[in-house]
Image (cartoon, rainbow, N blue to C red):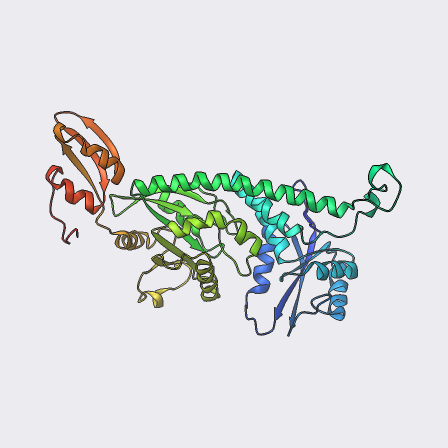
Length: 426
């Protein structure tokens, strides 16, 4: 079943959580994270059962005895659904529902529901719908036999015709195809925008990190972007980009991406892959880490694994240890390309800006160029190879532009207040 409560409900209902450790898996904050996910989704947590298995039971994941124990506790506390912190197979989910008599959600169901609630942009909603339908297509069951067509072809009587489950599968397949076509169209538009930035030599910096690490707060601090930020998991989903300046005169596009999490459902990774491809084209990654979380090292490793999966691990990266106002992070100050900050208070932000400027230093400078009219043809190359901000036609053609080293070297004779850079342009 694909459980979801109605948005208008004042009390979504109580749920009972089941945190499961399989084999030698270690995640000390698994139960707390599951509780935060459920709360973020709007559920009321009635209680929690923690369990450990060497290997999953093929029928009910935990075994019939443990399921009966969970059933007794959940029903006694008024729970209307169970939420498992693992990915259940369709058969396991159905068997558990049959045994306990209430709805059962697994980790994938829960995260998909949070994404459904939080997606705001058209592309975000399309991506989430695609992920949900992909997940639902594996969980269709024979619950609609009363809706089967009772006649065969040519209006002759006979056995049951097309089953409702087959109609459902076909409708889902048709909708999935339509969603993918719409997302491809949006992807082409994004590629056009990306090429425009690349032509203008606009550098891109992408924020990545575990969910609730403080990416959106840092984004707002650097750009004054007004992006929604809250102390909850997946507070924002939709990728947002804003322009800001680092080092005084270098303009960059800063992108805030969706947060990562342990066991992020593969349907979401696939659905959001087009958006997350922005990471591949970034000039610099800022890996935001919540050092106030005791499990920050595990969380950082999960993010780095997903960066590798997205083939973005060759891009320069600065580790940004956030929330240093509530957690001491001095022991990491010796790391190369690492900065300790508080996005909330602003502590460490100047040092972060300097670190970004150093990593992006490609000799790019904002300059005023006075072109003689007989050199007006150079204006075309400026539009192609630099970011032209202003053009004024006076005694000469006065151009304000952010130029890469190659252009600066070609036009140095016309640049106002030109001084040779410390390093050779070559």
